[in-house]
Image 1 (cartoon, rainbow, N blue to C red):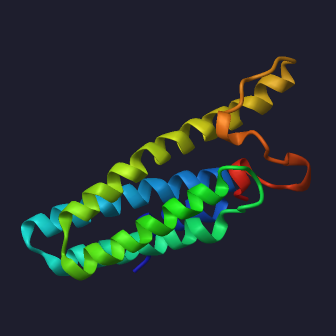
Image 2 (cartoon, one colour; image 1 turned 90 degrees about the horizontal axis):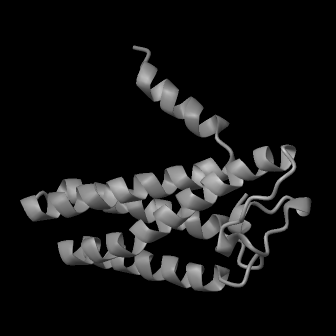
Length: 155
């Protein structure tokens, strides 16, 4: 049977640009962390494990897409990703909802920052077309749009 919802999601991912894909990854990571924490609190280790493994896959994707040469803070972000990945593995092995919660507390502000950066990046071309500058997200300084490096070295 044809699954319209699945096709819509597939199309959304396949047609999204790098900035949108990044925010989608962060959004899904937060969903996985929330579900894993809730499942662990309810004692459903199987459901928690599935969410935690998917969250680990997302963090791995974030790590692989980060260009550590694109800007000064990239190495620190990579270190944070590595820490979160290690903590998620530990949370899964030991069924530790506290570690999952701590990871969520680290990831949530990053997700907000990425969403803000994406909004500002989207607004910038429209403002430039009207002949005025739009302030760039502070961490986006150092990106090189001329050679195709995306926002914060992703893309």
